[in-house]
Structure formats: C-alpha cells, structure tokens
Amino acid sequence: MITRRSLLAGTAGLLAAPAFVRRAAAVTRTVVDALGRRVDVPARPERVVVNFNFEEFTAVSGVDGWHRVVGMSRSLWEGWRPAIFARYTPIIPNLAAMPEIGNTDDNSFAVEKVIALKPDVLLLAEWSWKVLETQRAQIEAAGIPIVVVDYNAQSLARHLASTRAIGAVMGAEARAEELAQLYEARYRDIMNRIAAAAPKTKPKVHFELGRDGADKIGNSYSGTMWGRIATLLGAENIADGKLPGPWGPVNPELVLAADPDFVFIAGSSWVNKPSAVRTGYDTDLATTRASLAPYAARPGWAGLKAAKTGEIHAVEHGLCRTLFDYVAMQYIAKRLYPTAFADVDPVKSFAEYHANYLPVAYSGTWMASLA
Image (cartoon, rainbow, N blue to C red; front, side, top):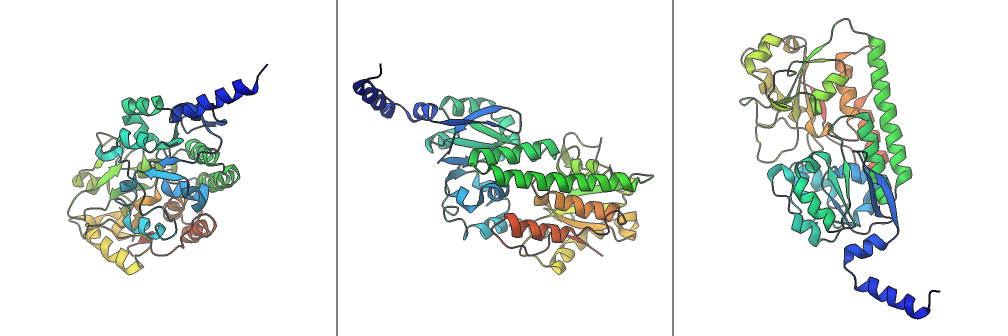
C-alpha cells in the first residue's frame, strides 16, 4: 500500500535529484531519428538545443518552437548565411541573444556549453554526430538525448525521417507530415519527369562553389550535396572519380577537357567575400549576373559547350541539403530537360514554400542564368 508519507517522501527525493534523473522519470515519447535510432525524449521538451538545419526547424515547429530553444550553433547560420540570419532575428525574439555552442566544422563545438544549458534534447546534424563520438557520449551521460537529423545525404528517406523526427520532438507531427508529403510529392514528380524524358545521353554538368571568385578554383562535389543532386537528376558529373573525397577543387584543365554541357556556380550572401557569386534575399538579378560573369571569362571557358549555349548558371548554395532543395532540383532539371519541365516554375515553388511554411517573405535572386 502506498501511504501519503511514502508518496511525499518519494516526491521530495525526486525534486532533490539531479536534473537528468528528473528528466528520465518524466513522461517521455520515443522518436525515430534520421539514423533509425530510437531515442526517448520528454513528451514536451521545454529546453531544446539546435545544431543545424535552422530553416527546417522553423518550417516544422514555427516561430513558437524557437521559444523553447536555449542554444544553437549560431555561427553555422549567422556566420555562414548572415543575410538570412538577419531576416529571422526581428521575427524570432530570442534569436539575437541565443547562446552559442560552437560547431564541429571549425572544432569549436563545446560539450560543456551544451551541458550547462541543461537541454531536454539536442538536435544534431549527422555530419556533426559522426565527428563527436567521444563528446556525444559525454552529452548522453549527462542525461541529454540526442536526435540526429540528416539533409546532407540528399536522400529521400533521410529527408522524410529528419522532418518527422523534428515534428515528433517538437509536438508538431501534423505540420511535419504535411511537409514530408510535400517534399516526397515534389521529389517523385521530378524523378518521374526525368524517367519519361528518357534522354539518349546523359547531360554533362560541372558544379563549383563560387565563394572566392573566378580567380580561385572552388570546391566541386561528388556523391554529396550538388554531386548527389547531379546523380539524382540523371546527369554525368565531371567531378565523379576526380576528387580525393566528397568535395574538393577539380583541375581546371579537366573542366576544359570534359567540356560540360551545363555549368552551375553556387553563390550566396557570404560576408567579406567581394568576388563571390551573389545570390539570396537582398540580391537582384543584375547583381547575380555581374558576379557570375567573371567565371564565363576564365581562360578557355568561351569554348565550352555551356558557354556557347548560354548554360552557365548561378544557384544559391543554401538550396542544397535542405527541406526545400527540390526547388534547386527543379531549376537544374528544367535546364537539363527543358521540354519535360516546361510547366515547372522553380521560383514560384520557392515563393509558395515561403508563403506557406516560413515566417519571412520571399525576395531576391536564388538561381539565374548568365544569359
């Protein structure tokens, strides 16, 4: 028999216990993350730390979801995409003063900062999860569950699993399911159109990061990010088999020898990069084209098929590895298979995504032809 005295004694003991013990005793739900891991998290976490995929988190949980965020790898948003970060700070009240936990990209990720924030859950990108083998054990030992999301794989299954995992953590399952179904519908439509087009030969493409200007050779990608998108779209990526890893610069002579049919230079709103290809909310078409022009003027590039046919393009680098990367896929596929995608408007698709799922308005130039 449970007496009133024993019940009160048990409650007092629980309140005196460490925070992670109290969390373990609280009502929980099981979330399946992008890696297929089953993770027990509080039924309603009130303290969330977000490592990456901030716009995906926003689309799923809304601005209200940010009220429960107590820390983030802010350099991955504020540092990498400052113009985008600046769009969100007036809308999300606690974003400007959000504590920084560091990031694994520059080895600044700080376990002690994460633990000190006493989060109920940590949302962690898969690429960070991989390099934090020791640190993540420390985090979990402190009673902080880690839910992994992965949009970098450019995998339909992981996109859907990541979206649903965020929704399950934040109690926004219906919104997450709507977004997952939207993404799958757009993805399958693209794949079906390409299959119906049945090209006799694969279009040959070159992707390059346009962060440092045409005088420097930027990264190309193979098997991931733009490289994965190229493969999904049935293209021949000239970087495949030519890189020491998933990304890196391709020899300029190789580009000339490969003679790609299409060239896509990834731009963004980077700061302190005056020669970068400019894209994003605050960039007009003329500015994007002016920043892209030096690439077409590289030695030997005038003779490329892509240059002769006007197929040199700028695409926003942030459009890959996201819940809205189908917009970039639509744009690229429309260039590769114009007849099959004649009725597809990627700009309209992105504007609609903003109107329906993001708290900021669509504007600017995100993808454009030099011609």
